[in-house]
Structure formats: C-alpha cells, structure tokens
Length: 164
Image (cartoon, rainbow, N blue to C red; front, side, top):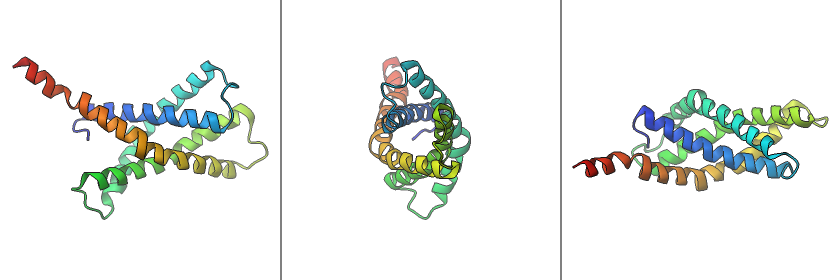
C-alpha cells in the first residue's frame, strides 16, 4: 500500500505499534504478569519492544520478507494474495527475531527455570506465532490498512480539493 519512502515509514510505524501493543499484552497475560509487573515496567517493555521491532521491520525482516514473498509463485497482480503472503512472511520473520527479545527479557526477569535456551526459545516462538499470525491477518493488518488508506494516503486528495 505505501507508495513513497515516507508512507512506508508511517505504515511501518503504525503496524509496529499495533503488533507490539497486541503482543505485549498477550505475553503479559500468558506469563501471568498482569498485576505483578508495574505500569512503568509494562511501558518499558513496550518501548523496548517497539524500538527493536521497528528496526527489525525496517532493516532486516521487511526487506527479506518482501524478497521471499515476491519470489513465490502466485498472482502478484491480485491484492489479497499479495497481502496475505507478505503478511505471513513478515509474521514468521518478526516472531523468530522478537522471540529472542522475549527470551532475553524472560531470562533477565527470572531466569529460565532450568530449561535450556533452545527449548525456551522454541516454546516462546511457538506461542508467539500462534497469536501473532491471527493478530496480524485479522485485526492489526486490516485496521492499519484502513486507517493508512483513509487518513494517510487520503490526505493529499483532501488537501488538493480544499485548495481548489
């Protein structure tokens, strides 16, 4: 949907905010941390997660997901399949990277409870993927595309009509 570099940054910011809010809340609930962690702690987790997610989306996962998605054999002229394939590639990449953030955060908070790093990472990644995919495909993605299309891409047309 974004057509310029500025629009791409705005779209990425919007998508990261939505996904990081959703995934932060999910992980706080799954790990029984609501009421245990302070509001400041939650905000810090969100801020760190957002910065890391945005950097990953902008410089590593986003470009790689685009390459992979558009190298797959499907009709790229149709918007829905392109959105679904790209969204799935983004979710896979982001879950794999952001689960490292979750593992490090978990370790810093209370250790790994005797589990190995690899098994803990696998568990975290699987739990995150199970929630992130429907969150992206059914909630955040459609909302961000709607808001972006209406208020960001719609801005120049509205301003042009008011100027004339």
